[in-house]
Length: 508
Image (cartoon, rainbow, N blue to C red; front, side, top):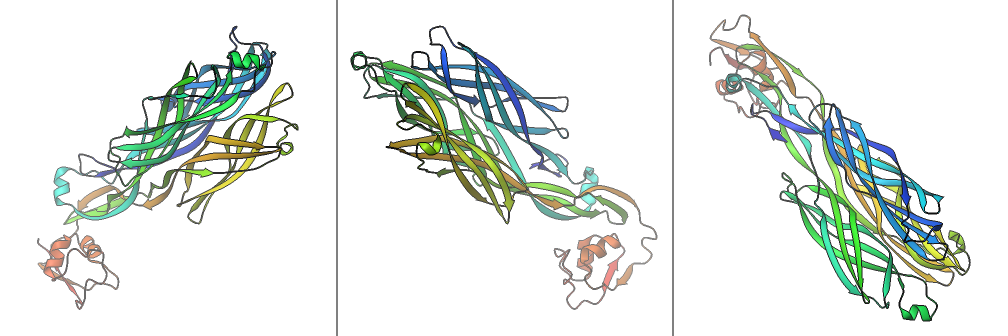
């Protein structure tokens, strides 16, 4: 909410919420120093937060999408390559002064080998776009009119929305492994934000970057023993950071998501060093009481007011929440051959049915666990689905939901695989509050004003002091003082007490 120079108020409204889907088509070439593609195993997309440019009634968004590719070569080894591409999309805006905010998540990714060292990738990206705009509440009066006007004020609840994208957050860690002369085949990272809180002029995020490494030994021991299967190593890099955002206060709600922008590894002996760059995208939402003009008039003038029904956006839920899931399927249930050894697992979340009813938002979906396994001399990938249903308290006519799986653990015992994914859900939802402020007012002289110095009026049942004052174009304070009444009770029909009639002063 903001106050303008003419002393009337502006309120922030959510003008539009929409989901925009677009496809990103890319081609990835494998460098000559890596083996040729025998079997494509997995493609991971990472969509970085967009830059925004507003022009000609449209919001133009652009950014980078990064791909990590894992494949098996003809020599039976695992290889990793990566590349990045740019994306663009636009959204039409509703009115001037709009402030759109977009959160992007990869939806579906499909990879296809088109040559021994080349593959085509098609990635469908979902953009959840919210559009916010400040609009004036009430009429605009001249300074002279503001001093003379009689105003019946009221107040309405409205929402405040803030959004920001952080600078790159740099994290480092080094650790020793039990591997001798380890080689990092693949390194991927996910941002986990279990705690996001609003504070004075900022959003505080406490979380960790979960780095998953797929490593193998290439030392003399591995050569002597004929080599061994790669092993998965997981490291957590904790962090706490404050995203500066002017106007946010501690009573507001907040949510945030993050994306790993860059991940580098170096190996010295049996020690692995990590260097991670992550970007956070956060929103804060809060409540505010906005005064508005319900009615007004000028004394001794005929005042005609026009009110316009409006709706204010009020946030009802804005938070991060994480859930621990588990499942114990057998190898056959997830399509893995007998004797398969699960080497690594990664997971993502798919949101299905969404409902808002009876003061609660419920979300159903499934976690897709992708298991990298080795059977015989072959590499393969199996999939297990774990359903979930989560709920958030709060009325919500419209809401945005983001879900990810920053961490998934796996344990294999004979023919049973125990999966333990950590589901992270981020939600922003809101409802609307209706009100009708005065938008226009027209003043004209009162006909037959001042016919006598004193008149009498008998209030009808339920009639208020404001209604009588407006009818006779008299200041409420003057009418109340002439009759020994409380001028503060303008809309109280019980203000009269034992008073049967009112004296109406013709001069004030």
